[in-house]
Image (cartoon, rainbow, N blue to C red):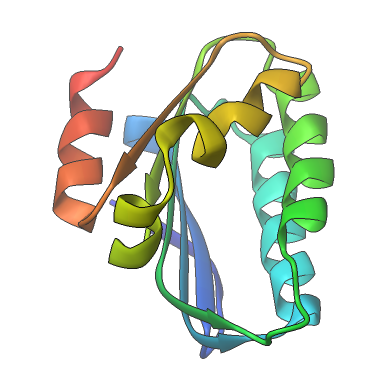
Length: 138
C-alpha cells in the first residue's frame, strides 16, 4: 500500500514500504520551483526509508522552454546515492518522443558520473511496464 507523502496538482511523491519503492509522478506544466520541491521531498523520504526501487514517471510532464530540470535532479540524485550506498533500480517512464528519438547512451550516459556505481536504469513507455520490471528485480 502506498503512503501518500506529497500530492500537488502537477506532481506527487509517495513511498511504499512493503516494496521499498519510491514513486514520483509528474504531469502537466511544471515549474522549476515544483521540480525542486518534488525532488527535495523525495530526498527527505529516502533519508528516512530504506529504498531499493525508484519509479519516476514524467511521460505527461510539460516544461517551460527555458527550464532544464537536469541540474536539480542531478544534485539531489547524487545526494541520494551517497545515502543509499547499495544497488538502486531506477525506472523512468518517458514521453514517446524522448524514448524513440534519443539514443539510450545519450539518455542515460550521464548517470555513470554519479557517486554510486550500482544504479540500474531502465526506460519505459508505460507505467505498467516500469512497475512490472521493478517488481521483478531484487
